[in-house]
Length: 154
Length: 280
Image (cartoon, rainbow over all chains, first blue to last red):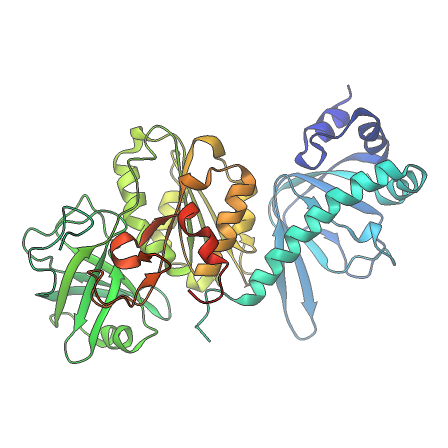
């Protein structure tokens, strides 16, 4: 088993995936990436051809606002997934992503993975179901943020 | 009338008059009062006092000091209501009435031998501070000690120096997150529930203490259960309109419970369904 394969298999997002689907994910894995603090990982509007399984580190999802300081929407941390724009048309990053701390992640080729999912709908269902859980978790967290639960009462 | 613990005062309706020994601001709207404790006063982590501002009224405030140190009676208060805003205006030397302690404490002994996980939201860290201090004073009785702390913005972080000190310890894991931040913040951004999946604790051997806004506790409880924590091992501290603190007036009733007597610390599986009801 290669190092990349071993590290991919150990990531929480991949836990419990059957061998055949795991092989497809391994085929889509393009390598381990490391980011120093302040590295820009993704830019709003750029082509989203990657998805990252974060192993370690803290990455800020930011929105830039003309004339104002960028605001951090959320951070993505150890064991989480960064990026689903590769699976949603028009395949463009919706926000900026910046490394806050030294970070490492397994990079997946989104274009290759999409093709594999089109060819193998079982794989497609598995990956999309897992991404749906990630997206649902982020959506719930974002809704809670919008509630401003620590603010003054209405 | 029997009270929840053996720390109940002799006449629970009669305030002891004491003085403010010190006070300091914690954040823009939150401050801490250090009082001279009434003679023989002692409390357990999670209990509260009724603080009486003469001429204004009474308010229930959790004790946030160190249960192992009897020299000062510490309360951290957010100045948002008529009594708490008046409390904020008091100065060192002013007199104040104290009734208490009341209520059911955090089950710190139930956690012995396993992991103790503390989840705090906003000023919810104040009622949990005595439990953390107790655990640190008895550190060898617990396995992992974990604090997950979420607040609104970096400037709203409570006990900043103390939390920094806890983060620097080798025998405690502290994860902090804020809901809103600009680039000057180097830590996590997101609600406190997002810390739960990656927090270092064994869900099968953990006791979890949760305090914060009710909606935060509802989602935290749900996320803890999703992580594998037994609902019977999760404890929440409820905030209600407590007036008599003796389970007589009924203002603090929450379903079948009187929060002042049966709580404020309640077991999650006793209240999780009530969290879903629109009006309780």
